[in-house]
Length: 104
Image (tube, rainbow, N blue to C red):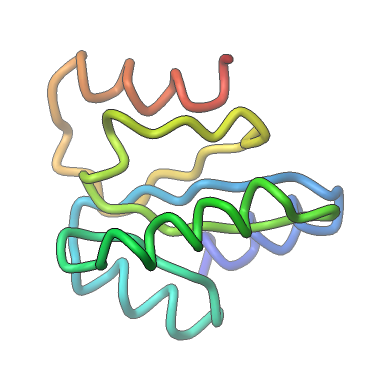
């Protein structure tokens, strides 16, 4: 519920939000509940590209749910908020990668 509150608050400000979840079940539940796109291991490359493009081109707020696949090799310079849910408390490298998504 707190995640929903944070997303709503930041969307009202026009922010672009990435929500990270290490737990796939929770990732898919929240993205379905909130009607937001999610990218995880089984997401086809074509769909990933479209979701990333839609996120970047959005003129107002946008929210994207990412699993561990979002830790590396993605470039979303318009993202300015990260919310992390259901973390497995990964390595410092993982945390740095995630934080790097909004510090570009």
